[in-house]
Structures are given as C-alpha cells and as structure tokens.
Amino acid sequence: MAESTRTRVWDPLVRIIHWLLVVAFFTAYFVEPEDSPIHVLAGYTVLGLVIVRVVWGFVGSRHARFSDFMYAPAVVLRDLGDVLRFRAKRYLGHSPGGGVMVVALLIMLLATTVSGLMVYGVDEQAGPLASVMAGVSKEAEDTLEEVHETLANVTLALVVLHVIGVAIASLSHRENLVRSMFTGYKQR
Image 1: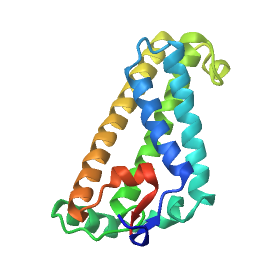
Image 2: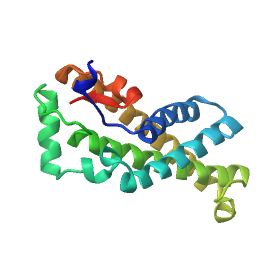
Image 3: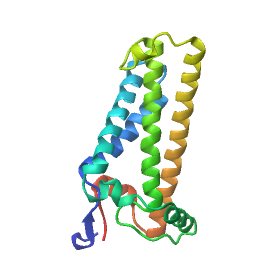
Image 4: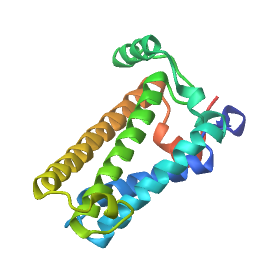
C-alpha cells in the first residue's frame, strides 16, 4: 500500500491494549485452577487494561474516543443488516456495529473481572474485595463462581462474534482489518 493512500487510525495505546487484552483474557480463560497465580494475574491485567481503555475512550485520539463510534440504535441496526448483506458503509474508525461491540466487550470484561475479584475474595480471602466478601455463605460462593464462569463464557461468545464481524468487514471492504490493528494504518 503506497504511503499516500494510508492514514493512521489506531494509535499505539489502542493497539497495545487490544492485543494485551487478547492475551490476558485467553490466559485467564484457559488457565486452571482459577485460583492459580497466573489466572489471578491475567484477571488483574484485564481489569487494568479495561480501566485504561475506558479512560482513553474519553481523552484519547480521535478514533479511540467513544464519541467517534457511538451511534443511535437505529443506525447500529441498519449497519448490522448491511454488514450481513455485504453492503455496509465503510468507516475509517469503528463502524456503528463495531462500536457497540467495543462497548459490549469492555462491559463484559469489567463484569467478568469484578465477579472474579468477588470469587477471589471469598475463596482465598485475598484481593481488594476480601473484606467485603468475608462471611459469604458456601451457597453464595457457588453462585458467584457460576456467575463468573457464565460472564467469561458470554465474553468469549462476544469475542467470536467480534472476529466474525472483522472477517466479514475485511472481505466486504477488501481490507485487512487485523493488519490495521497491528500497524495502526488503514486505507484512506
């Protein structure tokens, strides 16, 4: 791609957070047992990255900001329908459907990590929520563990939908969106 046809879209912080979230989420998802130091560290990493990404969504570069990719529900639904028909409008930053996915993933990652901190507080009497979780019954602990696992599975399902959406958009617009998340550049 010639330099004159490329433009920087994704700043380094967005790209680093994106790929570190991929690694940290899958590490936490697949490492057993769940109270292992690696699982716990991966969960804390996800939480920290989500917090930084949310802040960056308000103060970051143009295409990192939520205001750049938040659309009315009708626009999102129309965009998703157009995506499925392979006739979606091309956006330099996130599309309306992509923007909803970013927010949904951040919410689910946050919910998953907070529920994980709650389980960690009960199981190990450790972490920032340990004092709040003291005295929780075995029944409540089991429920929290189920909630945590369910949230992680829903997050994984969203990741799969995200990858499918990226593949469809890449094919539809004849551009490699995965490469752009590595390089930061897209075609003008």
